[in-house]
Amino acid sequence: MTDERKEEREDASHASNGDYPLYANRSDTLTAASGRPLRDLSLQKTLTEDISSEDYSISAETLRAQAEIARDAGYPQLAQNLERASELTAVPNETLLEMYEMLRPGRCSFEEYEALAQRLRDEFNAAATAAFVEEAATVYRERGLLRRELE
Image (cartoon, rainbow, N blue to C red):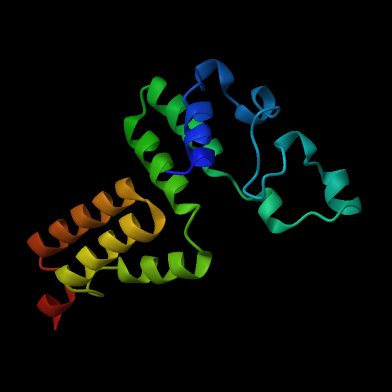
């Protein structure tokens, strides 16, 4: 894990229910995916400055902070979803769409899902998402939803 990602995780661990909504209560410490501070984003700046779509994309840090708030509020499944989403911010959009297609029932074999999970771990450091893919593959196998079982 890079020092930058470690710092982001440490910052996110400080979120609490009192920080919700994050934009109102933590805009001084949170950044967009581009690194631009959230406090620097506004409709006026969008119209007058060079602001990219990444400036309005959520960062992994913000998703982890939201996950912590969800967990503290008693929503563990939502927290897990947000944690996986934070991992996926490192995955290029084109790759995400390919993975999404693969996860539809009947698209892949069990071995292909295992390879996808390994890729998530190795290339993107996305262990929670990889575990989710492995769980989906097991369920697909149990329910006869793998590609070779449908053909």
